[in-house]
Image (cartoon, rainbow, N blue to C red; front, side, top):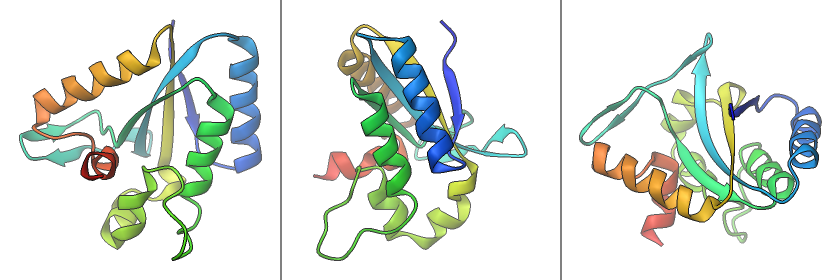
Amino acid sequence: MKPYILNFGNYDEFRKELKDIAANNPGVSFLYKLFSKKDGTKIPVSRIAGTDNEGILYIGQTTSLVDRLALLHRSFQKAPLKEKLWQHGADEIYWQCESVRTQYPIKQMVIEITLCDDSKNMEYDEISKYCRQFGEVPPFNGAIVKR
């Protein structure tokens, strides 16, 4: 099945699209990848062992599509309060580095959602494949590894 592609755009519209996807696909889990696009083209990401021309910023998985990706969307809207932990995990590097926010602005964020039977194993496989190719995990997954 072809993946769903959603622009971050307006939060309410984004959440409605997620609800529609979840309602039309009960009982499945989801793998999602975060990208940034400019003029319809994915922005490449420089990595230690080459350039990721697909521009993958984050790979994640969930069985609760609406809750998890609505949280991801909100986590990129404003920095967490000092006494709060990072909301999603992908937002940690984003809010700690102004040059990352400049290179990958929220308004250009895009999510690719793939339906799957076993999202945990698929996420592990996708991150492992990425790491073998580029020598490190996707940039916004880096905070998770450091914990």
